[in-house]
Each structure stands twice: as structure tokens, then as C-alpha cells.
Length: 371
Ligand code: IPM
Ligand code: MG
Image 1 (cartoon, helix red, strand yellow):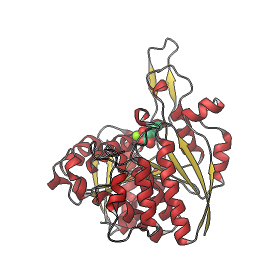
Image 2 (image 1 turned 90 degrees about the vertical axis):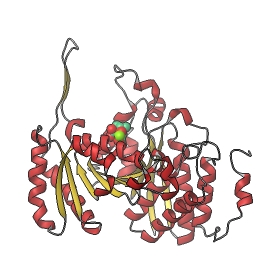
Image 3 (image 1 turned 45 degrees about the vertical axis):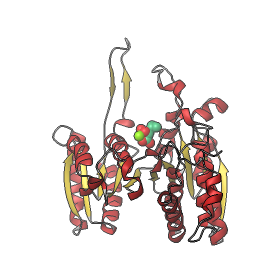
């Protein structure tokens, strides 16, 4: 199978984690006889530095022509503390989401028994946690009218949703729930917000088309608490843009490291895959960032291309490294392996070079404490 993949390495640790994901995709291509053709393009602070804009038109064109997009990370500290900056890296990502109509952001949350000790939650509460967040990504307060008064002392951001915007992502979430534990939780603030009342109405109406899916409704303040006290209760969470942004970061710490989690942003004809972590500028160029969020994003990309077996091999490779304590510094600050070593190990796994017993001595040699 031949596929075109647009690669946006982005800012901070984006390039180094994305390179490992590409390495794994190359190993998959070789083992399964596929051809992946990569086109590199710019977005974010990197694009501002090189072209003056956070999202050059060329990037949109390349993405539109691709079967999937692999993205690293966005953001640079020089813009974060400057509220007056007119051009910001994040504008690139928001514009790309809007231009490609990537309306559904999908973030799976699961736990690994070998990492239970890293979670801020008690092991008994996180064993078996496995849920998925469907966050609306191209509407709501993120894209509403924004205004600041002439004197600069008042500002507003409008939040608006249409039935159509809600329906299209709700269908995806219901369909996914049907294939999973058949439970869907709509998270909103329907006791206060008009937009939330529309979400509730539309989801209630759609529920009759998915009779086997149990639907419940939760206010966002309560949901933020429930994700901590009893995360096992969730299967599919459906929510609007801003609530999803906040809840998905909250949920990401359950597994023990933000560096592990992948995401997919799906539209009608484009799909983008990125780790959920940020650009982590303090670690950039040091080969210490965790590449697993990016590698699992590549697994989601393979799933999207309907390469299910290939995606599973990548996930098996990731599980194998975690079970054998081949982990980066965020997971084990003393005995850690480098970003590139983890990529190499998973790539070797995918290529069938690691079977049953591993030559741990060779791997030990690449451990940070020895090098
Ligand atoms: C995310 C990020 C983005 C968002 C930023 C970088 C604009 O936090 O993908 O969750 O708020 O959507
Ligand atoms: Mg976010």
C-alpha cells in the first residue's frame, strides 16, 4: 500500500519525537511491504522564524494532498509571556484545524501496570482505566468572535455551536462507544450555558439511533472531579472544545506521564496525529523526551489507514519497552534511556529483531547512566 504522509515536526521536542515515530513507520513499511512517502512542512514558531507566518499556505496544500498528517508539537516560551504578540505559533495549529475541518479530537487514556507507581492516583483506582475523549475541535469559544475594547480594558470571546457541528462529532463518538463498552458521557455545563443546552438536546435526540449505548450527562465541574476519584466509570466522553482541552490534560496524568499519550484529529477528508504533550522547550535537543506519545500517534495513524495489524505491532512494541523498563527520563529519572534508543528498540521490535529474550547487555550499554 502506498500512502502520502505530511510531516510537521514543529517546535521544541517536536522534531526529535517525530523522528522516532517516522523511524517506526519506516520499520512497518519495510516489514509489511508498504510505501510511505513523507513530505515535510512547517508550522508554529519554527514557521514564524523561517517564513514570518505560523502556517504557510504551502503547508495547508501539502496536508490537503496527504493521506495523513503526523505532527510533533507547537509553542515557544518567547510568545507565552507576551500577551501583546500579534503572531503566535498556536495560531498555526488552530488555523490548520479549521482549514482542514479537523472537527473531532480523539484522546485515548489508558494505564500500564508497570507505571502505576508514577500516577498521582492510587493504583486501585487506576487499574483497568480505559476511556477515550471526543473533543470538538473547530467550534466553540476557540473560534468565536474575539474583541477587545478601544481602551483595552474589556475583552470578550463568543462561544457558539450549531446543531450540525454537534451532530457530526456526536455520531463518531456514539459509533466508537458501540464498539467499546457502550457507554457515552456527555460533559457540559447545561445548568448555565445555552450552548451546553443545545449539546444536551442534540445528543438526547441522537441517542435513540444508538439504543445499545447507555448515555449519561455530567456537568464539567463534576466531571473534572470524577476523572480523579473514579476514572474507571468512563468509556467514551464527548464534550465541546474548551472543556475537552482542559479535561484531556487532566486525564493525561492518570497514566503516569504526559509523554505517553497520543491523539488523532479527524475531519471529513483529512486526519492529523500528534502526541498530546506540548513542545517542552527545556528538553529540546537533549534526546531525553519521551517519544511514545508520538509513536502511539503513529499507531493511530496506521489504524486510520486501516492498517490494523501494523498498528497493533507498534503498540506491542511500546508495551514491550514499558514492561522491560526501557523508559525515558520522565518515567525513570535515574535509569533512563534516550529518546533515540527507545525509538531504536521499538523499531527493532517491529522488524522482528527482538524475539523473546533480549540481549539486555547490548541495551544496557545504551543506558544513560553508563554513557
Ligand atoms: C491542545 C493544545 C492547543 C489547544 C493549543 C496549543 C492551541 O492545548 O491541542 O490541546 O488549546 O487546543
Ligand atoms: Mg490542550
